[in-house]
Image (cartoon, each protein chain N blue to C red):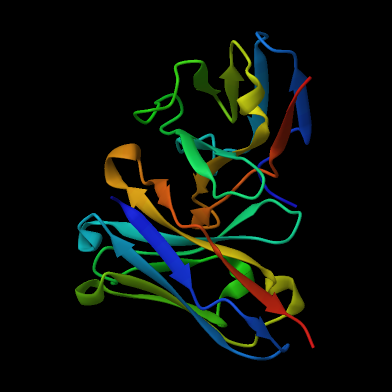
Length: 110
Length: 120
């Protein structure tokens, strides 16, 4: 069981806005930046958001991240069918001295 | 093209050993921290270990400490994971990834993964 908690599933219809939460503690999210990864089943993960709210080049601005206290969230606006994937948050944990991944959230586009 | 290619995955008996490799190309390997992440079948991602640019610092998840060793050869642009005393719970796809300094060390480039199966 991860020290960082995400809802196991989320869903939305095309064009909608969905958010995925990520809850941690003072030793991880509370004191370090959060990165988000997208993984389409059967493929390698892809970096989506780094440093809480920054997008690598090539990531559409439909994806945005935020952080407040010991929680972070990923928002996807204008939902598209190709957004159907698993999403993971990942902060560094100072107590564990290592990176931790949330359990992952499976996004379904209805 | 920036690329990471893992190899070495195999079927191994419990208690056995295995060495994974990750070949880097398209970037200056020695300028980057590198990491291993694994994913058990049907499960989420789990960070395993990472190593500093020059190999002087290494960090591990508790579950592999004392059994796994991460190393690198900057002259060969290669990252390794030596695994001993393998257990059924080590069964997973193992990914190597690059940590981009300007991205707060986020994992910006990933390999395609190599499968390790621990079973008798």
